[in-house]
Image 1 (tube, rainbow over the protein chains, first blue to last red):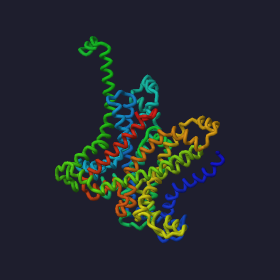
Image 2: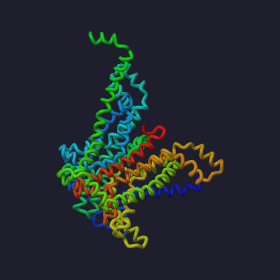
Image 3: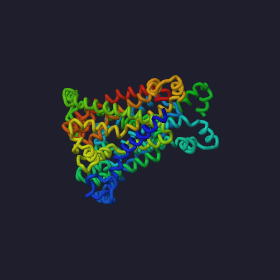
Image 4: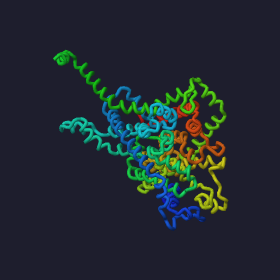
Length: 273
Length: 309
């Protein structure tokens, strides 16, 4: 049976890889072609004379500022959700908490509620609170979206770390907080990395929250800036594909670096796709 | 002095109880901030949205209480029902493609061993991308020109290039295909994990008993994989039901509303037309459908050994 299936399997895998990566490589190829070659018939799969012009054009349009904004928002959101998430995950793992079962169900439920379903009232709420179009709006919202997952994975890992390790550290003269910092957190590294990676991907990749919460051009995220760029220069496919590549590199690199933890985190708990 | 004197007279059970109260207080203090954060961002807006859905709100201006008017107007609008129908077509259409695809790839990945992880990583790359960037990318691929990727495929097959995104019949299947391309591999992770739990001995016993590959798939793999399959189905249903960014980026609900799902209708009514009272009524309807889906999801997860709670 194995031998019979082997060629089918190999062909299936190659097909899967081509379908998954082909479109992205085509965008990369387009982004490196001079404008005159982009619509060449038949299409050039590999640019015969690659040029970086379209990437320079993005910089000339100031898109790199949006790139920095996206990075800043994502890192702030990751920091916020990790701080709150680790503390709560530790509390749920080590202390009796009244209503604990209900709290756990709430976190699982919140993990599954897509932010978009409550985005409209959130927008009006943020307008009234004066948070609309502020630098804090997106980090707060992204952190809120990621926090349930951060609590969930860190709790699962804290549960797996024996209490005796902390107690031993405390006997050695560490305070409880020091014991957590020196013993528990390093042990929960996979959970921290899973939560951080997921948080980064969620924040960096968002469009709909950013476009409804931010109005000023200087506070835009990269995704919003690219859609505005498309609105003004809809046919400039070279520059648009350069934007696609630039927007894709950070999350894909993060994903490739930490995929082991991310995939592990998803197999432990479960989260929205 | 008085404190220690009191402690002398207190029986041990009571001092244990007060110690327990103290640790409970510490636990609450640790969990509280995250709980408040999550309630404020994920739960409170739902209640506020319900309040707003009972009022007439246009362009951030509240024009007063109107009772259930937004709901009755919404539910008597045939366009809203069409949008719900399209949400079902989109969600179940995508599910019908994504789940078998994820199952097949999960089985392939398990059989490949070490190379399986490489393949899983490769097919997960689109999932790591931003949905709106995916939309931009596919818009370029689908450009109806002989110089575009799809256009040149059409000409290679002898057809003139056609614009799939402005075709009222083909736009929806195209969106479904792209939505599946973007995230089916996420389901593969969970299914591959589920397959790993099935003991190999069962298959060996089955082949000793002379079961065919298909029979052992139907009688061993499918029933034992059912918990993972249910998780995958409920997660993907929630994800597809709420998919909006790919639609915003590719078709904006068109052509002639043929891709206006309930999620897109919410975006359009609430954020484009700024009819926020009615938009919130749609948001509440969507929220309730989501809660129903999530309740099913939590039940499935809870039934799993070592699952949710």
